[in-house]
Amino acid sequence: MNDDFQLLVSVLPESLQTSVRGLPAGEVLLEVVMDLGRSPEARLAGRVQRLSETPVTRKDLEHVLTQVGAVGDDNRAGIERTLHRVSAIRNRQGKVVGLTLRVGRAIFGTIDMLKDLIGTGLNILLLGRPGVGKTTKLREVARVLADDLGKRVMVVDTSNEIGGDGDIPHPGIGGARRMQVSRPDRQPDVMIEAVENHMPEAIIVDEIGTSAEAAAARTIAERGVQLVATAHGNTLENLVLNPTLSDLVGGVHTVTLSDEEARRRRTQKTINERRAPPTFDVVVEMVTRDEVLVHRDTAQSVDRLLAGEEVGGERRQLVEGQVEVREEPKLVAPLPAPSRSSSSSRSSSRSSPAEAPREASKLGPRHQPGLRQGTSRIYAHAASRDLLERVLRDIGADARVVGRLENADVVLTLRSRANDPKLRKVSERTGARVLAIKRNSSSEMRRVLRDAFLIAEGVDEDQVREAVLEADHAIQRVLSESVVVPLAPRPPRLRKLQHRLVSRYHLETVSQGSEPQRHLIIYPLGALVDLPRNVDRDGDMEEEEEGAGGLS
Image: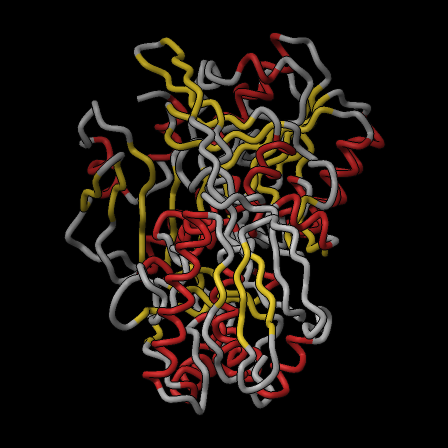
């Protein structure tokens, strides 16, 4: 055991010192936990060991607190000139009822996997779960930049975890200088002060966790100072979805595309996009202490993520002292097709005939041939579940609401949330149909669900089934033979239902004739349609909607 570790052991009550020294030499001690009225525990890498059967008393807690530095506003204290941390748990009256004594270690060579990135001058952000070694790597980054690369380095040390407790920094940060932060809420001010007063070439910051700290980080980056920091979050996706910290990787905002641009991208008109250049050029996801996933181009990775694509990256592992690097695959997930509704009697798309049946196979209506038979399962994503259940009952849809996204055949979501990365990944994996609504209202849900489930209210179900089967057979003929197929005359509500079904395959339709002989004609995709004189190209669907009792 090294001298630093002995200093941590020495602050424990005598009985616990003996127990800790008796722990197996080959196992790594992470922390000692002391909770009032409970047995003390040693948390080792991979297991927990009880140190004593005697419960911890207030006297034991007070003994430790008298041996360490003052507990700050963040409920943390340290042992002078060591990297160990003592964190307190308080009751509602402010009295300490628990302590976590975390072992701090300065380990040289821990950034061998990242050394090529450190010297580039790029801003680097480290992400990872607690205990994976982010602060240990950050400390080594400070030493390498200062001692090996000869840069002027300033460490902004909020809880003294990087440079240790006391006024003299721990040797683990090498020649880097250290600015302590008196209170956690002052970290953004100290970050800016470090740049303005001390002319550093690189700044090291641990645990960026607030919007003010994220703004300070952007200010530092814009002044040309290299910034290496850690942030709360396990992965890049976590960070993008975190409204407080997403600015670190460029931020996210919702934009509305023109009709032409939406067709070109094959997306909905409302999508999420990166708002600005990222503060950090490189993002490193720490999987374990010896494995990382590197995103060398943060902007590109975030753009791919928001587009619903796999971001890929560079997976690096330390194996027997050697760094192994392999590229992660960048599989592209198709974008979920937005629900289509037409305001004219003629609908078309640039999709190929081969793509049309594939897109339609992702739909969830019970009447749609080739779809899952039986009751459909719907998940409410960013929409009211209670309202969805009520609307499904009202329209008589053969569907039930489920509580997990992964179990759904159909997902109902707000249009502004339809491009959420998780939603898009899961829907691609499960084949679930994504239905978007403009607002969280019963009328909007009824409109979208009636269209999706091919429901014509007030019409006999046998007539609905007959009309749908006729349209489906005609669609298959048009797709396979590229011929024009007229349908039988139908009432307005059933014509509109057939029109909805045809529009999903992105074929062209017109209504022809006068009541009661008015009927649909289906044309191959891209066909030049010469409409007869008795067909009102611009007003036909509006007339059908009116005749259908306002179904829209």
